[in-house]
Amino acid sequence: MESPTNSLFSRQFAAMLQRQFDEEDANDRMAAMLQRQFDEEDAKDRMAAMLQRQFDEEDAKDRLAAMLQRQFDEEDAKDGLAAMLQRQFDEEAGEQLAAMMQRQFDEEDHLLAAERAAEEQQRVFDCKICMDTLPEESIARIEPCGHSFCKECIRGLIVSQIESRRFPVLCPTCTAEPDNNRPESIGSYVSVIHDFRHAG
Ligand SMILES: [Zn+2]
Ligand SMILES: [Zn+2]
Image (tube, rainbow, N blue to C red; front, side):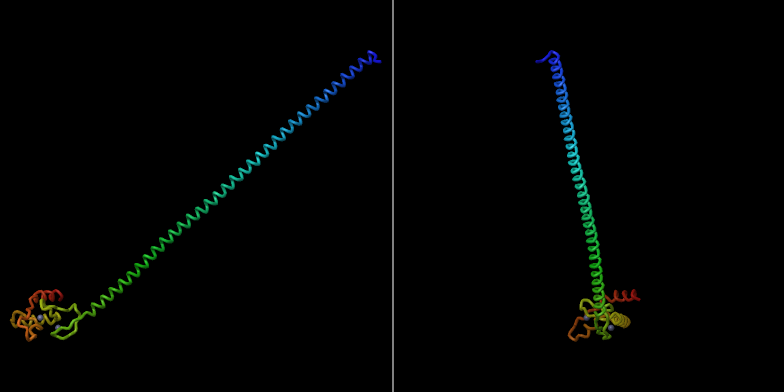
């Protein structure tokens, strides 16, 4: 049987227990809320850390790309330098080849000139008056018969003919031919003598 006092006490005790229960419940909720908040912040930190790693990875990728680009640029520069050196070498080789060909050409030219000089020295004729074999440069050819004598002999012939007043001066070879009735006169003797005077 409950007394009013006991009943009041019981109600008060029950109310106290209820408050305590409510407080513990509120504490639990608060704790759970704090835990959730903590978990959220932890998740945010993890997310931030993940984003940082991702950022670091991208940064590393960028640095790697930049390094590869520099390496590529260096190789490109090396290739360019090699190509430039090759062109320079080719140009020098071309110049050397041209110089070598020029030297060879000059040598051949000198050789040909020497051969021509030797041929000219070897080109001789026999004078029908003095019977000497003489270089072609001392020839005096009578036109149009084409008979040749040395200049000394022609000069001597002309001088002796003029002194003997025998005109015209005839070609000695034509005159010596027994069946030649019209020997050529030495029509150009004046210029021949003129040449002699200038030759000294
Ligand atoms: Zn002669
Ligand atoms: Zn003649």
